[in-house]
Amino acid sequence: MSDIEKLKNLIKKIAMEQGFLSCSFVKSTSLEEERDRFAKWLKEGRNGPFDFLSKTFDIRINPASSSMFRNASMLVIFSAFYPVIVPPAFSLASCISSYARCSDYHRVMKNQIKKVLKRVTLEYGSFKYKVFCDSSPVLEKAWARKSGMGWIGKNSLLLIPRVGSTIVLGGAFIDIAIEPNNLGRGEEGEEGNDDGGDDCDWGKVYWVGSNGSNNLGEDPNYNNLGEDNYNLGEDNCENCEDNFPNSNSQEDYLAKDGSNKDGYGYGCGDCDICITSCPTGAIVSERIVDARLCASTYTTSPVSVDLDTLSFFIKKSGSAFGCDVCQKVCPYNNISKNRDKIITFLKPDEIFNSITIKEALEMPLSHLDLLIKKTAISWIGVERFHRNLLCFSKGVL
Image 1 (cartoon, rainbow, N blue to C red):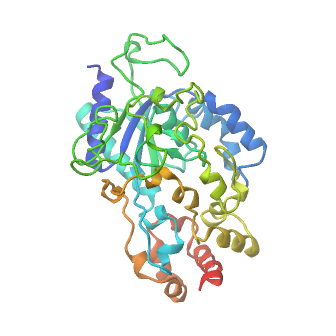
Image 2 (cartoon, helix red, strand yellow; image 1 turned 60 degrees about the vertical axis):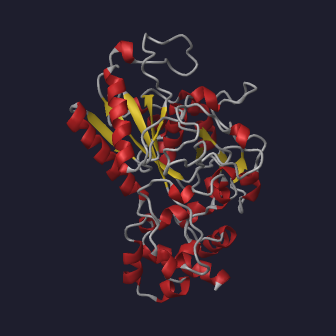
Image 3 (cartoon, rainbow, N blue to C red; image 1 turned 90 degrees about the vertical axis):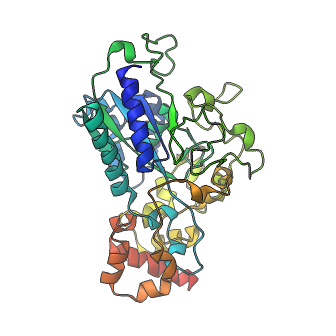
């Protein structure tokens, strides 16, 4: 076994112990396959108020153009599952996206990844790494797709086989010497460029849970995702079963007719329920989301927005923070009756179920601030969140 395989096995073992859903590995190169798509999206202004996306275009496509990632030889991508629990009517939880009821994933994911890598360095040896989760100029979903973790659905979210899209992503650029004979497969599309490194499978996805660290191909029943004989593949949705890959390499996400060879859209088939269900028409076409039309743009970020516009998007989405519509309707998020059994460190805070929206509006801002302090809601501040709640309450209470 090569040194790099030993490193990867150690990372997956410790990731399992830390409660991650899966981890995968990819060489740190450039995302040239994303360049035209991303540039066109920006040129059309679909980034809306998020100017930083255009300012960091080059770094997002080619991490080596930044001193932060220049010396990295590989990326490790981690996914963590978050539960989706139906909240009581009129509870504060009922108007907040599922992910935001948990501890702030930005901080939690980074901390958990750092814990994994710190433990790895103690056993493997010292190496440099740069951890990221959502707030760095990194295209996490694109790297996750390239690593073989899943495919990009029509709502532009990463879909993981047998699990769905209710996950958060994070990762790390790792600066470690990799010998030429351990490089594994060449860049996507470069057939025959093995460099003698077949023992290093860059397309392997490691699934982690309570029963071990079997990868996707070794365990077709996915029993390691929470309990013995736990079958995430139990089919509770029509016409989905044929779309689930039973192996673990990037090639298995390709459509059987040879189309979608860029790794996008496989598994969605003719289904477009996320597109037709979007309450504001933000999913303008397959995998193209216009931030100017997305409710989450105005309710989860501190962008400047007038009260009428804010009220419109809150009423349309039925949420004071975020919007889960395209995920709620996705068949892949409804395939298992046992999703609440999946091992994870992202757990919703029960206090959001026990407080009503009316009670939240009536409490002092200082108390409301304490309530949201450890969640992603804190990113917009308590005054902005209170304003969102007021807009929401006018149409509900």
